[in-house]
Length: 164
Image (tube, rainbow, N blue to C red; front, side):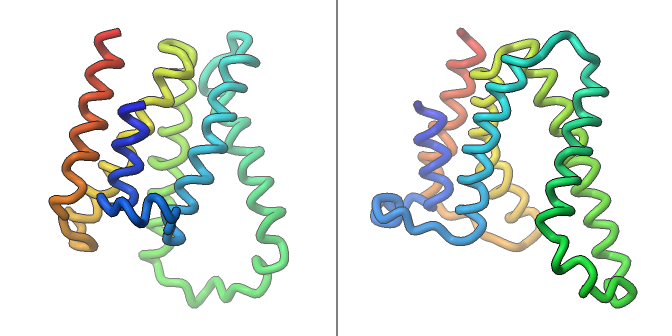
């Protein structure tokens, strides 16, 4: 519960009225929907895991995910002028494909099996804090003192989870 409160605090940048009004920006809404989907995914991994190698599980998760993305983008994929896209965009796509997807799913599946779905999900509360840190490091955002209580709540929750 502490981790959830901390993550919500960070997402809403400490603005109580925005939290009560559920005033999401587009990125927050995508994150929220992703959290809901991942909660179901974590439950299913724990429930359906039958001892397969993690590499195999990760492969099939990524193949099925790519299939769903292809279906979702089928109408637009042929209208994109691929040659006009800069090399930097392709590098970012490779980075997101490898680190944010492949490595993350592999580690998450391993964590679910080793420490349990609840504990593995608890670590996802760190995502808003890391997103804030990365936005500061890349010069996209600034640290607002109002998010500090949320960061503290998430860190305290992580210590409690580690202790239990």
